[in-house]
Length: 300
Image (cartoon, rainbow, N blue to C red; front, side, top):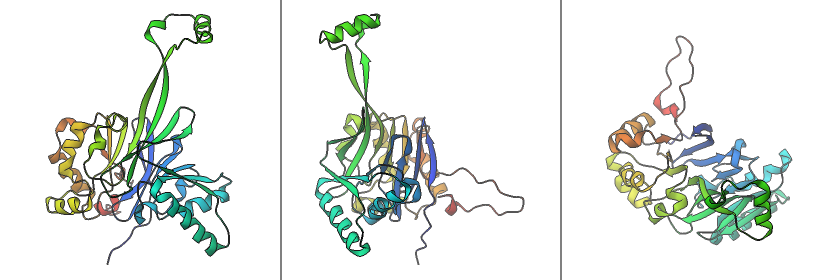
């Protein structure tokens, strides 16, 4: 009999960014970036994500999308405006139908915005910040998402000009700035290896959250059948991306986290270990004298 643990969101500091999430393969996946007001997947809609205005759903599997209706319905109780669900265009109507069914069941319509996107499309989050979708190698209508910031940088030839001079040039229609895109966080959702790793906003993301579901050698066939990552794929991933921070998510419960760490150390180069961490790696909990140690199972 499978034992399901309650959602216990983990707070993960990655560089200067905080991720709040819970991700176990087949059970629940939800990863939020509170300071950017974006959540990737919704899991069963734990309370920590309800205040976040933008939820990006990578695909329709229950462990990633089951809480959509609950997320939208709870926003009103905290005084928040209607939430926004960003999903593949081919699935947007299905989410709208789901909400219509819940309205019939509850006798009340939960307000919310469903935004359907195609791969490569941007959805503005706020001025200078957008979510960009891209196709991944999982199944039809599966997407990954990058949070991309557009920054304005003074062109080199105008460095040293005074403020009034720059204002005057702008009034004359001179373009004095370059627009530079910076990918802050990329989330692949469930996927096998694919061409998306060559996309600049994936390859150069400051933080890349990527699934690595399977670790044992005997689970390689499971990975291939389900279009998931196996630890043996990580050398290629790390060789293709420049992200200084790579966060592994969606680990199967078949593999204990301590064991997964050991297998990872043997699977990738020592130079890459410093930039890789597990989303569900929790700091040790202080224990009282005589209290038994937590098992590795509870680490996750």
